[in-house]
Length: 174
Image 1 (spheres, helix red, strand yellow):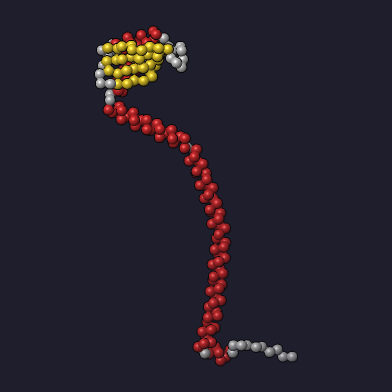
Image 2: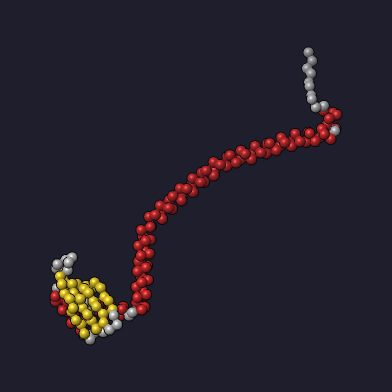
């Protein structure tokens, strides 16, 4: 038995016509376009795994850096607070020559006397401090009298925090 082939597009005559050539070119071109499109889709699909791995790595690095920043948050707050205090102190020291009075006053401090606060007015300043003994306060007053015009003990009392200490207030005229 003889095999017969059925070809719906006649090869000889149809390929010679313009319509036949356009149809053959279109069919072969679409085949190439489909293959190229499939290659692009496969490349995009495979590159997705690489991008996912990169994204995961970047998220991990970001998490580590956020943890580092969170760890320094309290230190940063404290640092900014100290900077604010230093700015305030520098502004005050520019306006009022308190630092020279403070240096002079602290140079006369006996070992058992400590200062709590110093406030300055036009012609005098007030020193509040504490001491372990009356002798320390007396020595401090004597030392200050050698430098300033008038030193007056305006208040002396026992400390509320520690009864073994005496809290005193001195008015010093420049």
